[in-house]
Length: 249
Ligand code: NAP
Image (spheres, rainbow, N blue to C red):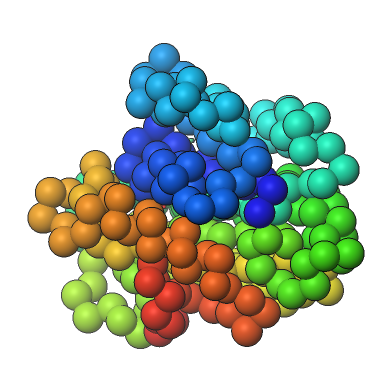
């Protein structure tokens, strides 16, 4: 893999994924890591100071007008190689979860950040992803992250089949919708040989996952990276967890 763009890298799983990639046996040449506020991204900045392959890009993903600038900055670095992977990781989970307490603004905001953002960012990155998919035809014939891929960070809470507990209206619907979008992308972009997959990271100890979660960030992130490299055409349009296990829709 020559290049990857990961969103939400100042903390949690985004930061963990950047660390896992840097530590991997064949780190990408370019890791584009986004954060909302550069001043607060101390750990990411330290990591980037030690690893020139990390390019930090400051962006609030709800600012859709700034996507063109983000894409052109990436394009200036990757040039004719294009972008191999877009990893839509940034997400939110509101505190109000019950039907009696859910707030309109939480529903709208969560749907925007967890569903609309990954779709619109995928659209914006398509020219770079198509370029990478086409540039790979001399070497990497198979679909996969070494060629071109969109990885959408979903959640088992977005599974309609696995929902036995109810509640979490904003979060569940936003991730179920993201899963539906991923499936459509996998069909629409098959002709371009861009692999599209949704991924559940497990229940992980982050600000979102909380302190009771069984998995730590390093374990989930390193398994995710291992799993990413195993994906091929047979995984296109699927819903998997961090260790590659297939999940129910
Ligand atoms: P986290 O620790 O709360 O981190 C969320 C990240 O998303 C932060 O970097 C945050 O930036 C960024 N973000 C949120 N809204 C943004 C926006 N509008 N623009 C730019 N960045 C934005 O969460 P996490 O646990 O690492 O979760 C990462 C992904 O995994 C999410 O999609 C989440 O739904 C999914 N997930 C997590 C778990 C789990 O157990 N942790 C389970 C299933 C799925 P700021 O620091 O600026 O807010």
